Length: 480
Image (cartoon, rainbow, N blue to C red; front, top):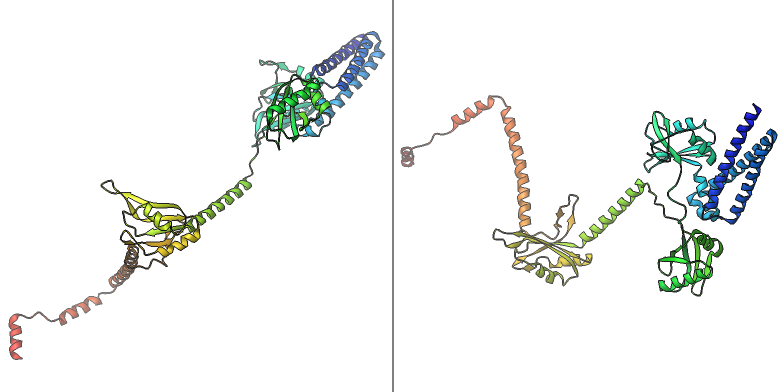
């Protein structure tokens, strides 16, 4: 039994060491490795090899010692990864000092996460937490939602390290989709795999350049000077793209590999030439974020725009004059010549109608808009002048709530105009309505009276005289 248990321990230690070596090799193969990181990796690999030899050669006691040492080593790696994980946030990139180290650890941190999809409305975050709380190394579950706080039907599950994430993943059954495994939760088949983000924190082979001093207008000469400057540092330039003017000049430099990018940012950083000074930094890809609109701000902006429109409308109406009683053949040019003597005219609207013989004639009124409100008030002097044989009437334009224009009656007190005629007719119509009301009321009262009125009417008819004939008139004449 002791030999069987020792064999099991030996196998478990070997698998742990192999997994750690695979992780370390993956980090060594990353193109943006730091020299310090490489030394640490080599030291850890040597330690692991020593533990491997001990596990094969020594007895059970030594196996236990190697097991404890390897666990300590794994815990150290956990601590390093957890520290890196806390700092890996997109908005903290500019505050981090060692950006090269961040680039090296991006993949290793993402491997601690599991990507879950095919989530429907029957599965909640509480279901995940109740299920994964029993699994070793589980940290948290993060549901991805959109701007309206509805689930996008996928989530991320964080583990302490890659080994524990893989250990859980190996317990699941394979699915029809490559690199995905199935997990049944609440009678729903979920697909799970290791997280592999499509978007990187930095753009590969590209350096961002920001000019603090630029006294050269030609982009071609700037590109030549930058390429010559980097060539002195044994860095070959593939392409340079410049943006902005001389006050806010910036751009992007495309290099051959990521090692040259690290050289530019870590070793060079600042560049100073005769007429140029610039900073070199990693290029961060633009991430488009959906902004939830603030309804209160939108309402405020709408109200402000409405007030501005109303003010502009009032200003325009104060500059507008209504001209009435025009001849049907009066043209716009004639009004332009007459009213243009008072002030500058912005617009003249002369309403027209088409007669039966397809002849265009105006309707007898026009709207004249001046550029200045003082010119509009001074144009009232031309009231009652004769144009094409008619006395024109001028008034300021007044717009009521219903959108119908009203005329200022202080000036239009002429009895011979159509407007006064319509006013009289309208006023007579009102009185006529009142008379009719009184008439109907009297009639209704007469109908409700008793039959005594009929007797009175009969008495009146009895007292009336009967018509006289010609003979009766002769008799009266001769008597007199």
